[in-house]
Image: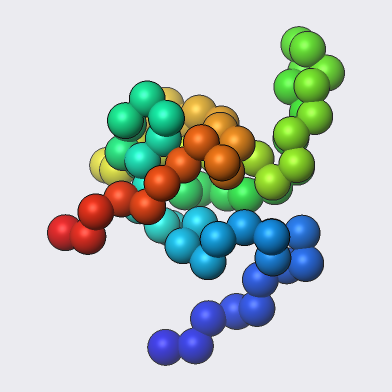
Length: 76
């Protein structure tokens, strides 16, 4: 199966970080990558390039992390 080319802003990320990937964050929570993009926190005005939006597998509340806080989940 061919994959779409990665946007230029995502080319600095490891290939295993992509929408739909299973990952583990720095708090050992396993999740599915929902979206990758620039994010500015409306409360703090802190800007995060290539923020990774995560959601637990099966649904639940989404959270945002920096890509360097992730590792690839073990294969099932």
